[in-house]
Image (cartoon, rainbow, N blue to C red; front, side, top):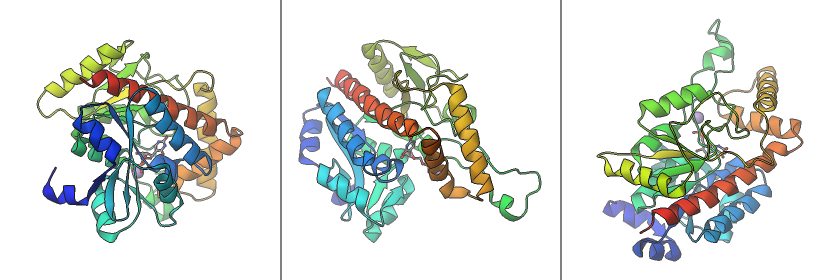
Length: 317
Ligand code: PSU
Ligand code: MN
């Protein structure tokens, strides 16, 4: 870490102590709280993720930009303040510098969180799902008018994962993305996709997909050893650890696809595109599923935080 970054950084005392004693720490993103989930579920799930990490014997460290500092480890009050800030930015890695300089509150996505975790020596991060390559929703037959704004949308999460030696525990990526292209991108970027108890790449709302993880592990110790071997190689970056969504709430691939198709159709009809697309699609799916997608989102994020806690403990000396 550079001197300049150290000046801008505020590590929570508990996190700093745990890191100095080589004890297990799990990074958590704050965008899931500020942008990913609606109130009041956002704070309930954020707190439950903290509790789940602690229950496994690890220390949670939610990252954010708050009061002009990069923050690693937030109290419940700080998390609530961030979520309620009217001008809170969704920060990818590239947004951290400007948000810091401008004194804007920033909620960190996966890309910003892995960057901050790597800089402070945190090797494990638990979240719901990562961003990826979006499907192109608008018809591109004739590129003119509104359709001319339909361009490929690739999350910064993918490149960030390739750079930072951090294991991101997630339920894959949302089925509303182009998942085959997302997996191809992870391959091109050299990011191993490791299944924990699954051969199939989980698609967030469903454990079913016609895509495979690169390697399956059923044993936490073996998964930890694979990560340690990966990180023993020169210039190794991150890894994606896939945890299928909880069985009692997971949906069939067919049901999810129908929800996504309906939501995308409604978005085209309403002229929604760009940054507004994902929130629109998610809200549509939530309503059409009578909140089942919301309950599932919370439950899988908490389950991933718990697995991240176990993995961090297993990796700590
Ligand atoms: N997936 C979820 N919930 C989320 C996100 C992803 O199930 O809240 C957030 C994460 O913070 C992820 C970000 O890093 O969205 C990706 O956004 P974008 O596609 O703009 O990079
Ligand atoms: Mn994007």
